[in-house]
Structures are given as C-alpha cells and as structure tokens.
Length: 420
Image (tube, rainbow, N blue to C red; front, side):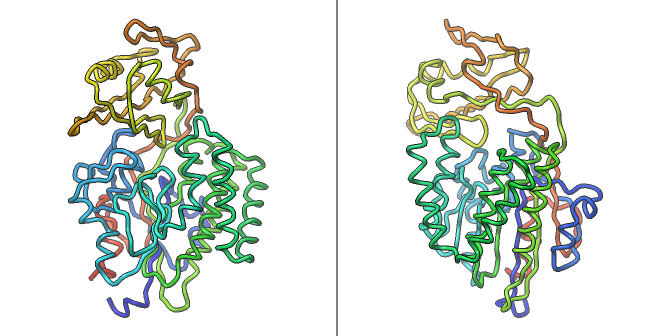
C-alpha cells in the first residue's frame, strides 16, 4: 500500500447495533460525524440460534480469527480457541507485520498480545491487559462482571479507588473534566441511572483513557457494548435513547478526528444485530454456587459465572455427572429450564449450565431433582423482560461497497491493503 506507514484505520466494533432501512435519517450522527461518505453493507454470522452460536462472544472471535465458529471453537466466554484459529487471528497476523495496533474493549479475544495494546471486555477474565497497568482500570468492572449476583462492596471499594486514582493520574485534567461533563450530560438526558446508562458512563470514561494509548497506531479496534445492552433492555425508553445518541455522537467525533501525521479512514461493524421482541424473559441464578452445592449436591471447582445466566465449572466425580445430566430433562411451564453441555477432559469434566427458559413463569412453579422439590423462584429471580433478541444479520459501514460478507471475511476485506 502506498505510504502505508502514514495511513490509519479505525474499526469501531459497535456490537449488535441496528442500522436497518433508513439508517441515515434515524441515526444522522453517523453521516454527520464521519469524515467520508460511507456505504452500508450486510454481513452474515455463521450461526442462527441465540445462545447456541448467534452470540457476541462467538461471532466476534469468528471475525477476529477469520475462521468459522466450527474451526475456532470459542463457544463460551473465556475459551481460548483452537491452535488453527490462533494462527489466523488478525491480532497475531498484525504482530508479525510492521503494523502497530490497539485493541480496546475486545469481546472474548483468543490471543493475548505482548507487543501492542490490548484491553479485553470485563467478562474475559483470563486475558491479562497489555500493558498490565490497565488491570488497575478494568479491575472493578471485571469484579462486578464476575460477582454481579452478590457483590461484596468491601471487596469492590478498594478496586474502585485504585481505578479512579489510575484514571486521575493517567488522563490529562482537561480530558478528565471533559469526560465528567459528558457523563453528566448522559445522565441528564437519560433522566435516570439504569443499567444502559451505567454501560455508557463506563465506556465514555474508557474511551478517554483509550485516547492516551492510541498514539500513532496504524490500526485501532474499538469495541462498544452500550448500544447492544440498550436494545436488549431499554429500547422503548426515549430518554435513554437520547442519552445513547449523545454518547455515540461523542464517540464518533472522537474516533473520526484524524492524527495530523496519518491519513485516516473509519469502518463500523456490528457482527450481528437484534430485532424488537416482547414477552421474552431473562432469569438469573440467585446464587450459582449455592445451587450447585446445596440444590444439586455436587462438588465442583473453578466456577465461572458468565455474561448471561450461565455457570461454567469442573467436576471429577461421575456420580456428580449423573446429577447434572438430570437437568437436561427439567421442564417448567412446558419449557426446558436448562441447557447443559458436558465435555470430558483428561482428568475432569468441563460443565456448562445455562438457564434458557424465557417465558413468564408462575410464582409457585417447581420441579423435581432426585428426591428433592426445587421451587423455581428459590433458584432464579426475574432479571428483566427483554425487548430485543438476536437475529443472524450484521452490518458493515465503510467507504467501499461490497456484497454480503461472511463474518470470517470482514477483516480480510477491511485490511487487505494494510497487509499487502
């Protein structure tokens, strides 16, 4: 590529964002804030069922590893993926080139870099930030991601203090004041603080820290999840929509401001998207560890509570395996309650349990576990009614037109000139 060292591309990974027909009128901020005329193309996830591959923790590895889900094998948050996928990881390829990059907030990355900047999403606890000092920033959010069912505030408080101290000394005062002002406007426009607003506040502060590290990099990958969370949970809330529009407009202005030493282009990808839904309910475990030890009566280790209502852990006893197997047949209101996956490893079983029931469960519903009767609402609490569900369509907003791209082909399309 001509003058490659002077060019830069910003890839905004706007998770699950709904463009759809008439996006220019619905979201004028994209055409107003972007430096070039951008064209909207469709992309194609390689799975079609939500919670069974049509999920961000699966589809973003498909995009970054440049191989289909069946090849990379990252079906769960925190799984490392196959060796074949790691070799084709766009991050691994960039490391072997002379191009520098920053990967900020990346969803479920399979490769932990040592030569460039990497900040993983809060649920990817096995990926250590690079440089390691970024662990100070992400620590409280990662703690909440792992313990959102029952956070211990005495454990959380020192992490928050350390994170705020790190931000204060790392970010210039002018930049910090701007971030605080923007955060105030987000709350003012939303007229409340709900979970979507909390996502925006965190990602707003995060992006101001990102600017400190994004210096003279050839390629920037930036992952944002606020829009996806809003669409799942608050899409009918007009004031929260205004807050999201303000937040996204600010991010677009920040990312589209070019470095004076580089020509810059921008691309936006969504991996998948959503559609409006009703009567879809989400249930979370009150206490996943207690459910396993007391209700099921099993011995387990290395419990990991994921992004949705899921338990990932290990067992060794085959008697415990039988107890887990019975969950596959549990039904409430004529619907299966659990999805169970068991994989035999060398000297243990890796177990994944997820609450997949999504109907309105009546108050006194119960089910049998061996000789025990378990009441549904003693194990689960209704998290909220979902107003957005995944659909197998994604979008690419870029200066080049293209036909529908499979997710595994997006990086090759965007970075072909940079890697030639």
